[in-house]
Amino acid sequence: MSQIPSITVRVVNRAWIKENPDNVNTNNHKHYELPARLQGMEQALDQSEYYRRLTETGHDLWKPILQRMQREAKEIQEPTSPCDEGYEIILTPSLCRLLKSAADGGLLMGRIPRSLEEDLEEQVLPLLAPCFGWQSGSSSGPKYFVRLNSCSPKDRTGEHGPFEEAWPILLSLCTSERVQKALRDLLQHGIRDDNENSEDLKLDTYEILHLNP
Image (cartoon, rainbow, N blue to C red; front, side, top):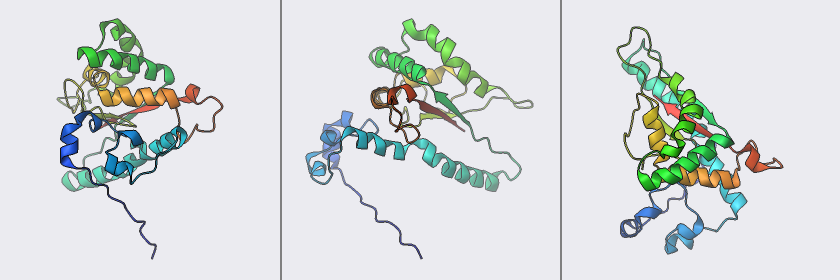
């Protein structure tokens, strides 16, 4: 019988969370952002190792397990109903830069910057719109919860999902500090398992936008 690897649980004091809300309303944290007590328990990592480890926590690694659990649960509730597994939309480097620029302004204004609306409509909306085609015999279209591979936009402005159309998804991505931070780090370092040996990591940078039913 194989031995289950040990798991280490770190505890953060609730009072520290209340005093430092900005430090916990994000996804992954660097060593200097941790409470002093946890800094003593964790070893500081150089940038390349830090971002290599981030690739081990991406949503696409867990998605097959989540989908299987969802299918099994749906089969119990609706034995004859097919399970829609959603969509994965690849965000190229240029799209990541566009969304990062929109998030820079969106965080300040609480809305999508008007100067970038046309670019988003031309470059991102065409990728999202086909996911919302209504099915024949259905009174409504599909609904999706949304997240990037590296984080969810749960601190966004506007709807919290599930989303029934494309534009509110853009609003959530462009007004989320978590998304802005994730795209910034990705564009700066661009390290993923499938391109970490590239001569120019930044040219191969990309994200995945998950639409989960």
